[in-house]
Length: 153
Image (tube, rainbow, N blue to C red; front, side, top):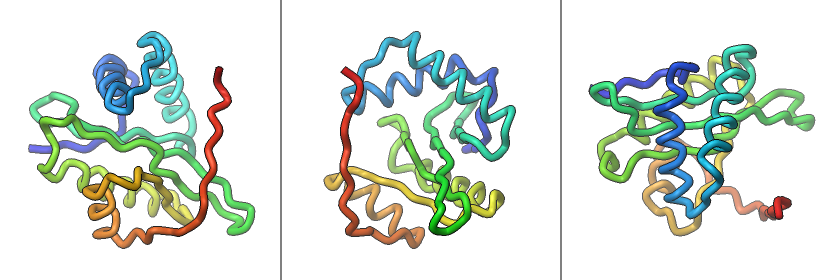
């Protein structure tokens, strides 16, 4: 049975392993100690401020198999806060089992509970499975042009 829950500080070890797998999948390799420290900081922020970052995890038989990371977005135009699905990952051997759908569904519940104005996300153009998933929830592909600059040397 699949269990979706907000990550807690006692999930730090399992999350660090899952985040490391996610980073490998993205071909990004920060030091594991940096990933752990960053994750710990996010979990502490989540505990201190309900309106800040939110990490939802998916577990099966007490094994963490996926997560969604929500971060706040501040929109002056809407004069309200929104949320960004900043990261979504399911372990390769657990894909095609409804886990990403469950995580997105819970992310939507979290956005509604926070009275967020919107829920945004970005995915790679070639990730057709993700496009189909998000569109099934009613997400609309925006033709806005995004720019990215990596400011870390």
